[in-house]
Amino acid sequence: MAIRKLFTNARIYTPFDQGSPRSGKDQGVLRIFENGALLVENGIILSVGDEQKVRQDAINLEIHEEVDCCGRCMVPGFVDPHTHICFAANREEEFSMRLSGVPYLEILENGGGILSSVRSLREMDAAALFDITRENVLSALSFGTTTIEIKTGYGLDTESELKMLDVIQRIRRETPLDVAVTFMGAHAVPLEYKGEEEAFVDFLVEEMLPVVASKKIADFCDVFCEKGVFSIDQSRRILQKARELGMGIKIHADEVHDLGGAGLAAELEAISAEHLLAASKTNLAKMAEKGTIAVLLPCTAYSLKKPFADARNMIDLGLPVAVATDCNPGSCFCESMPFVFGLSVMHMNMSVEETLVASTLNAAYAIGKNKVAGSLQEGKKGDFLLLQGKSPAIFAYHAGVSPVKERYVRGERISF
Ligand code: NIG
Ligand code: FE
Image (tube, rainbow, N blue to C red; front, side, top):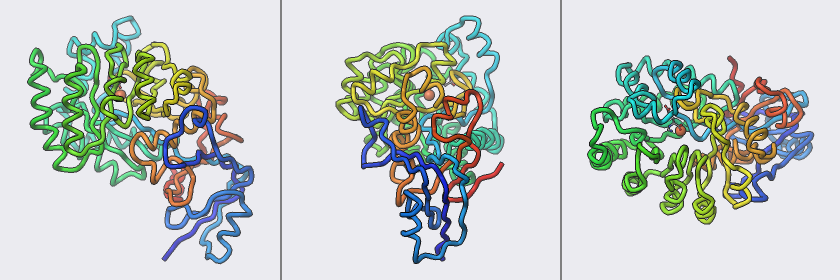
């Protein structure tokens, strides 16, 4: 039997999906319904718009529940398109080292950083890893994230990477969030391959990637293309293999040094390139030509004390921009999309409208979830937030708190 719910008296702010991510002057295009309503049938949006129009659409239908949104602002649930939220332990000592001036990459070079997360994750069993991950993911949901991408990359051997993938699949099945899965076996070179980086790339390409692909449990493959981690040639080899095996491809590009990762993303027609703090204008222009999505992570710039990505220039170049938390235990421990929203507006000079598109519709495109999430439109899931505030500007205006008062996934209220 079809169960229908009608949400009325809402100020609806939503991007409008026309079949591609929004870019350039269109990055900030929204649909706004001051006196809006949303009709959900079995979790899927049947009608959205002015209340009068939605009531008209519902006229011959049985409505099982009507919810008065009390004039609150309604926006799509956030899509967080870049996280490393599956990890075993925090790295607070390392954060203190960074505060005293030790660079992020130097900590990694000395066997800490990502490699310390590899040690703790390898030691932990899947059940305990699931409990920790679930707690962090539910915290993200409390801040309004209803769709999330989660990367592996703290296992770096086949057994531990598969353990991460199993845990992420369990998160997908056992929490209300929709999850996109990214295999990131090329997150760092593990200690057992120190000095034999090429052999690790061979192992990834010849052994690990085929095993992961054969299980069909990862949607994307990502590489940390960075000085001292994976070179452009190594990244190209890994990503080409992933593509051959049917995976979508993404790149951690030009986070600390301008290695040319943004150019590689364009060359390989990756779905997205992420970070881009040090990317050159020439390579950004190549991305714009190919329609590669720029996933910006302002909370990482904040936490690494680096200049923020030049979002204005990227939007002017015509790149579709998305934003994400990058939630991880090292460079940025933050699962709050409202915080990312505030940083995007205040420090990347994006407008509120551009940021709403970046954190919903464009983010959904960046992880292949655009058919089901990212905007409040007929046929997509009824995933939305009710805010304490009149417009999405509240995310930047009311700093340091979450204005998310209620979250709905498939039309069902999630309570904590
Ligand atoms: O996106 N740069 C590589 N990966 C993550 C950090 C992971 C970590 O430090 O544990 C990032 O910043
Ligand atoms: Fe990352």
